[in-house]
Amino acid sequence: MMSENNNLENFSKISDLRAPFDLNSLVRDNIKKLTPYSSARHEFTGKASVLLDANENPYGSTLAEPFNRYPDPLQWQLKMSIASIKGVPAEHIFIGNGSDEVIDLAYRIFCDPEKDNVIICPPTYGMYEVSGNINNVGIKKVNLLPEFQLDVEGILSAVDENTKLLFLCSPNNPTGNNLNRNDIEFLLNNFPGIVVIDEAYINYSNQKSFIQELTEYPNLIVMQTLSKAWGLAALRLGLCYTSLDIIALFNKVKPPYNINEASQGLALEALQHTDQVNTWIKELVNEKVSLTNQLLNFPFVEKVFQSDANFILVKVKDANNLYNYLAQNEVVVRNRSKDVLCDNCLRITIGTPEENTQLLILLQQYEQ
Ligand SMILES: *Cc1c(COP(=O)(O)O)cnc(C)c1O
Image (cartoon, rainbow, N blue to C red; front, side, top):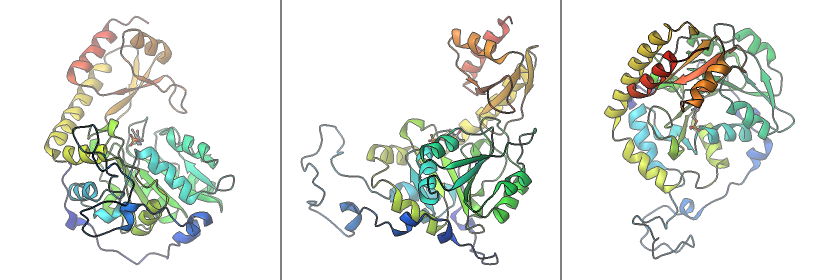
C-alpha cells in the first residue's frame, strides 16, 4: 500500500543521459501557436487591496462564505499541500476538474482530430476511448494478454508516425491488477510519444508510484485522483504530475478557472487528514482479502482475480443473472461481462464491513 506521506527531498535530480526527447514535435501546431486567455487574476501579481479588475460583485454573495471573487486559476495553495503529501514539487502538478479533464486536455494538446491516434489496452478504463471519440482521434486497441498484462510487442508494432499517446492504467480498471513495472519502463524508454500512466488506484497497490520517476522520463504523465482513496469524488479533482514543459501546455489549454473555489477550499481541508485516509486504505485492503475468501466459497463463483485496487473482478457462472438478482435487491455492482477478456465478470467495489456483509447474505440466498 502507498501511504500518503512522502518526502519532497526524494524527488530525484534530472538525469540527462537519455536520447533527446522532442516534445515540440508531438504538440499540435494550433496549440504551439495559441495565445492563451489571460484572466484578471492571472495578469496581476502583487499585493492588492481594491479589486476592480474582474467585474465581480463587490458586496459578497448570499452565502455564508464569500464566493464573489474568482478563484486562483493555478490553485497554488492546493498544489503545495499535495506537493508535501506526495513528495513532488508543486510546479510539477496540474489539477483538472476530475481525471476526465486531464485526459481530454492531453488529447487536445497532442492529437490532431482525424489525423493522429492513441493506443489503449483493453479491458481498461472507458474514458480513454470516449474522450478520443469526442476529439475525433483514432484509437488503436492492443488488448491485454490473458493474464491482464501488457502486450509490449503488440503495442510497439501498433505505433505509426501519427501515434501520440499511450494510455496505461495501473492498477488497471476493471481487472484490478498492477501492470508489470518492467513492461512500463520498457515502454517509457521505447514508445515514441507520451506515456500516460493512470494511477487512480495506486493507494491500494503495493507497487511504487511512477511520480518519483518524472525526472527520468520526459515523456511521462502520471495521473492520480482525489476521487478514490481520498473520498472526494464529488469535488472533481484529478491530478497529473509531469515535466514543467508539459505542465505549461496543460496550463495554456485549460479553462481559466477549471477548479472552483469550493473544491479548492474543501480539498485543502481534507488533505489535512492523511492519517484517516491511510487507515481507510488499510481497512479496505483487509476487507478485500476477507470478501475474496468468502466469495470463493460460493459454487457459482469461478474466479476472483488478484486485485491491487479497491475492487475485485469476479468471474461467475452467469454474470447477467447475478447482476440482475443483486440489482433487484438494491445492491449495485458493475457488470463488465461485455468487455474483452471479461466474460461473465462482475466488478465489485469493496464497501464497509456492513455493506460487504449485506452482499454476502444476498449471495447466500442466491439460487441460480
Ligand atoms: C475512477 C477512475 C478515475 C477517476 O476519475 P475522476 O475523473 O478523477 O473522478 C481515473 N481513472 C480510472 C482508471 C478510474 O477508475
